Image 1: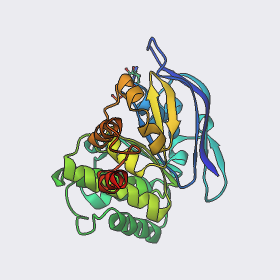
Image 2 (image 1 turned 45 degrees about the vertical axis):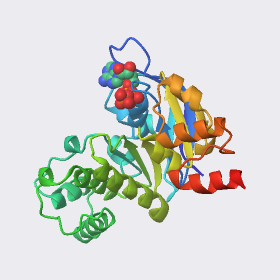
Image 3 (image 1 turned 30 degrees about the horizontal axis):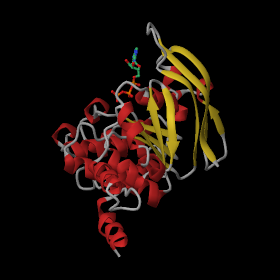
Length: 286
Ligand SMILES: Nc1ncnc2c1ncn2[C@@H]1O[C@H](COP(=O)(O)OP(=O)(O)OP(=O)(O)O)[C@@H](O)[C@H]1O
């Protein structure tokens, strides 16, 4: 079942000279983790903003095509152009790059409960969701903390907790680790994998740490100049190192090394994770 169906999507910001998205079509199936990579300015953030309706409902411009979101739990379909953003937020949650820009309450607890108050939920339901969001994101025990006092990784997990409390079926994350150190990055990406694998949440993840995308994504979309220029499984995308380099996508060391080893006929195929090296090299030598 497709939970996201994008067809012929083009978008130009008001006063911009060029289109930021050009005739984009793709779909995402329930339970998939789809990674989006591409050079700076290729339209990844703009695409994220179209998936929960911020574009074109709040950020206006020249919008063509359709974005249809289906709630897999009820089967209901929403055309983002015709659905208010708060309604879409209960199906598609959006997490942005910079956690600080999303946090404005005095405590962790208030931050998570904030969005729930507008849903008109009963007190018990608010508490149930609050406890669940704290538990899943590993923030239990920090309920009364002042969000700016948390580490970068904790702040981003809090931003994710606030989105999760809305119980979305789909989460879209736009470079959620770009402001984080390696420890924070690991915390956040570990949480994203957990939400996808254990909680069945469909994930669309923009991440410039391509190694993570190659390791965990079911499918990868590569964007350049407002278009999707490549789409495939991580192993297929990994074969296109030359093309990716030309587009300006930074390749992870594991890919650089494995392409080099294959050129020297020390590997039979490109590997996606460092752990695979010993078995593949051994395999060749035997
Ligand atoms: N609010 C805006 N008004 C006008 N043009 C914009 C606006 N936001 C982005 N753009 C332009 O749209 C294009 C795509 O930008 P976008 O931020 O979506 O790319 P990106 O791939 O997410 O880049 P990055 O990796 O640097 O975040 C760029 O040319 C950018 O300058």
